Image (cartoon, rainbow, N blue to C red):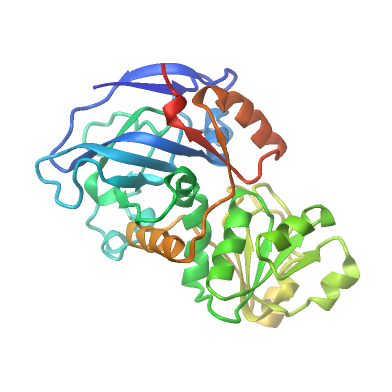
Amino acid sequence: MTISAYAATSSETPLEPFTFEHRELRNNDVAMEVLYCGVCHSDLHMARNDWGMTSYPLVPGHEIIGRVTAIGSDVTKYKIGDSVAVGCMVDSCQNCDQCHAGNEQYCRHEMTATYNSPDRQDGQITRGGYAKQLIAREEFVLRVPDGLDLSRAAPLLCAGITTYSPLRNWNVRQGTRVGIIGMGGLGHMAIKLAIGMGAEVTVISRSKRKEADALRLGAHKVLISTDESSMQAAANSFDLIIDTVPYTHNLDPYTPLLDIDGSLVMVGQIGPMEAQSSVPLIMGRRRVAGSLIGGIPETQEMLEFCAEKNILPDCEMIRMDQINEAFERLEKGDVHYRFVIDMASFNS
């Protein structure tokens, strides 16, 4: 199958039209027309080889909404015409304890990422959703609930589940005091999801620049982290802090904000951390943890939750040929709060 896409061919060149040959449908595969694909900051990192692991040519995209066009002979969950979704992974070993527990993202033998990852059977490098078609194993295809706006749902498959999973696993409920550091693609979803769970939500920001928007999104308060007196007054006031900041930063100003047994969960930055004082952790039995997306059952649960609560990301729709401009704006933080590619605009 010949598939039209956009690809990065090196770390220095812009994305450009690209075609590739995809394997034929396996018995347990679902083929889909890609309708919408979200633009994640990790797409930019991978295109630029910021993490030193990119295989070129690279077709990014792991926030995918599609329509089923064909199914393998063993597929039972989907039929042609169904609205479906694919997130950050398309396979795992399916046999280890974590896969059996629905935590495929922590597969003991590594998950297969939606792009830039060797296929478990033939070793070909996976290609993502910046393409007109996608083929994925049935077990990693998600059902889009009725009533969920297809044009805005794509970022739920990464930004949504990345923030939903720690909120869910740290048992956020009515009255839980949640702080959110950073208010980009991840942070704005964390606000909406935590509010949907009944939490008391505070955005923690370095300036008042985003205060009005934070309140518009549903946050109850904004705490300015550069205001020393406000930070001191907020000590011990959070049960959970979700840290969405995508670059190296000092955690010491934030850990004292946690109450006894509170946790700060990192979902943004990947890589080295600054040296951190152990004093606030020891003196308050506080924790710093990390969280990676969510498993397939939890991702389906998240989609159902968002449909029930009418929770959707704030999106700016772009054409496929605007992706390089979108990457430039993403690098500058000039997006409110997620780009989504309308693949109907892709005529190559």
